[in-house]
Length: 407
Ligand SMILES: [Zn+2]
Image (cartoon, rainbow, N blue to C red; front, side, top):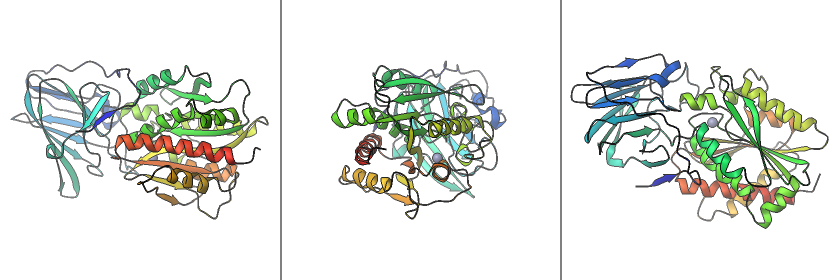
């Protein structure tokens, strides 16, 4: 069984109290917009989602104790099928647990992970999961022996505001880190920000990193943590980088969607990564203003924008090769360096460009002419490899930027 420990994050997540099993069989079906309140219970077992990122639409405990869970997107239609689920099971005693996951849209995608503490996650074993096509939809059936302790099942490791807070606490003592807030989300949650750079001699050239526009895209976050840690390393490359470049890091742009276990959107019902340029949502507006401020500041030069996401496979979405960027040729040099650092691994790049769709990568290039990329990690990429990729991408970026003529 593979252990999925969240790097250096050691603080326990605030996942709320355990639900006590209640007498009788009951079912609760509630609107998806408040899906974080869903629960069901019998005298033997209870299911709840009363914790950050907890989400299901409805659950029913049948005769014999089988748990039938239905998952639904936060609104219709989901423009991208990232069918998130996260729930807690509290058995009254050791018992064999049988859970079915059905979907009102998209069908099953993420291999189920299990945790007893919300920090250390493991994959369910292949013999514990059956994925089957039922009619037009793909559903999953989980079967496991519980030792009687409560446990969490989720589409991916639960990486929520408290996880980011613990991580920010771990990097904040670094002398080249300044922690602040970008602002607040539509529901008033904090959107944290880090400025990285040698504070004794403020650097002019500025790199912007953003993460978690899309709530279920946890592997992007798991790569972003080591990426940023590599920028803070106590070695020659990272020191030289911090002396010359500023890095602005916004690791959690959509805390509301993450908290609510949304499949795609923020609470305004909009995909944040289709809102750049339009800026109808407070979260994207904050990012737009941040970058406009960097661009307008004569003491700074906006150099590069990277956006961390997840999809089925590891891939770097870059700009079309015919587009000229400033600095010239950064992306090809960066990815060549990245590939050179990863013997036995094949870097996948997909260049493309379409203006007017509100995608950060394209809009920022269109507006500022800097190199941009969407750095995507696979849903089920081995977590040790995810860390390696995050570190290598950062080191390749630092090396490549240091080779560009100072501007
Ligand atoms: Zn995404």
